[in-house]
Length: 372
Image (cartoon, one colour):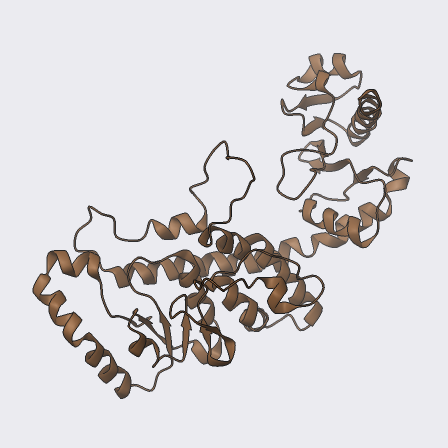
């Protein structure tokens, strides 16, 4: 059970129970201090009122550490109360790791993973939220705590980077209002973790909602997401790197161009391929990846950048949206089953057929580039 003390709950008490709210405003400080003085438990401080994904995750991450496992969470904006806390996140107007103060709302605050870690491989420049700050300062220790079977620092470091790059950085960016794109997005994403946490706050027309229960529910949500992602990174994503590495190393055996790779088995490959291209100075860059799908094979285009829908070389325009016999007639390759209308992926009944599609697509793509 997480013990949460909140100094104020204005959205419920001030409207529904005005007298109770007045009592709490007058006596809450003394009450909380008396409660604290009777208990020597460690205290994590954060702000009260509406909660956000970053401080919810920051609190959840801290409670994964032995020293904060049984900590009480004090939700308040009263500086006198916050001063009694052992660690404070997302409130207080102070960033000072030596005092365990981790707010990011100050005008002068410009810290990112790169400015704090100050070493190669930690080049992210997104401004940190309280989640990013706690992860930056305690993340390696947290991962060692939850992955007790992992003893190599190098492995912990790789997991740390991947979890930051694909989970924590998103929360940092959203909380700090960093746009994903230079242009206006064509659609909204409202199912991300930050949005789901936000919807757990009491709504404008809700009644008799316990904010602290909702905060606890939000902590359970982000904790499950974090731990699941850490396990996925360790057990699924990280081992896939060797599969991709072997495919890159043998690329010239697949095709003389060196621009097509074949995975020995299906596995997460795009992020690893971007990283391996840098590590191995791969040139020319990989254009197509072939992998097995149940009962068939896929040929997929390599995107220009992680998360991009723009590919280095799309499959030929004349193939887009075609299937089966019509596609076979258009491309001249037996066994062709489909090419997506956006042309980022296609299929063939056999491995040789998929390779033939990739080779022909590469030939056509280079011819088009020459014309342009």
